[in-house]
Length: 341
Image (cartoon, rainbow, N blue to C red):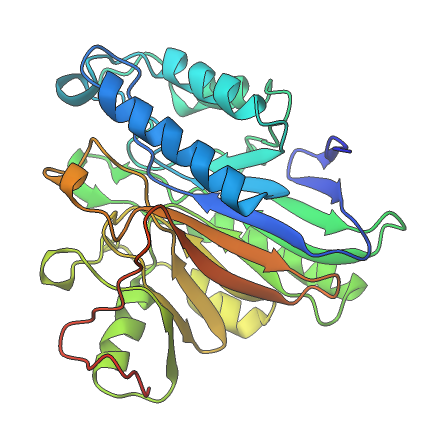
């Protein structure tokens, strides 16, 4: 039976889980639901896809890593992201499975009806939604933690939601923003405190836009660097594109130093599905569900699906892709299919 997450404060929740069974998370990303005049067919395809993935995964928690809605008038036919988010919540509440999310760079567009603060207020009202704006004195909207605990309050794992923000001051033309230093400071301080409870804590963090280290690890792998382990997936974006920020972001280096975060999960680049382990941290691109935003995306399929994260009662975790079709591509330019790195 679902027990609503306990709100500790404006930055953390406790979710009580079974003490003896694996806890299964389904990561969904980049749905780009329009719920407008131009997006009815693509919306139906996305919602059908979500239905299929949830049925196949039977998750205990659903985590959406941004760009869930798409208030972009030329594509969806509406700027009303308030209406869009309410429809998403109504749909997700119907599964009676707890869910949470972080914002992407497209959940809000120029001219959108609602701000991220407005969307956050809506997300807090969902029957099965777990969401907080986070601390008001740090950057972004939606920086918070979900701590998985056994009924005796024993800590199993911690899931960290981080807002990777949107664009700089010039909006789209200024390039992608990043996770800011005060967000990282908050994250590391909170994890260090949790580590006092569980010395071997393995935390996972979720955000929308990939860190630079995703690209660095990929390039090292292609050069045969043995410090990188290939797990699964491929880079399908043109010219091996990674949508990373040009701004400095300390999250990866601080995570290596802190030693608690062992998995990072993002979306953003719809055709990238690769997972690599680098410096003892698993970097994962979630499989996307976009049928609308990318030109020609409806004809692509090997990138489409979800990602399943299975956490054991001890806090160890495994990650597997869950494609909507029957294929997960492992094609990487310049590397043979027999990965040895």
